[in-house]
Length: 68
Image (cartoon, rainbow, N blue to C red):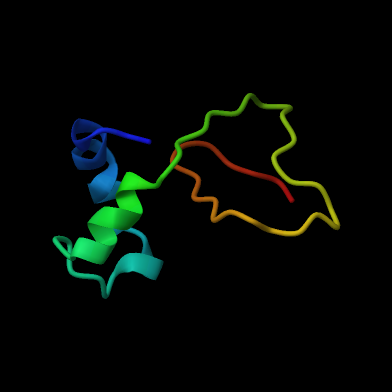
């Protein structure tokens, strides 16, 4: 799990996403959510999701693009 410094680093990214726009930035629930975030990095040809797999995560693309 990320430390407090990491949370402060990517909190603005999450707050800029429409899905989070109504959440108060200092909400205890939002901060708890950020503590559970797992940042992942993928290479160009990596498969991150396969058709038919159940979805167990929320993916937000910070940089680059994803083809489905």
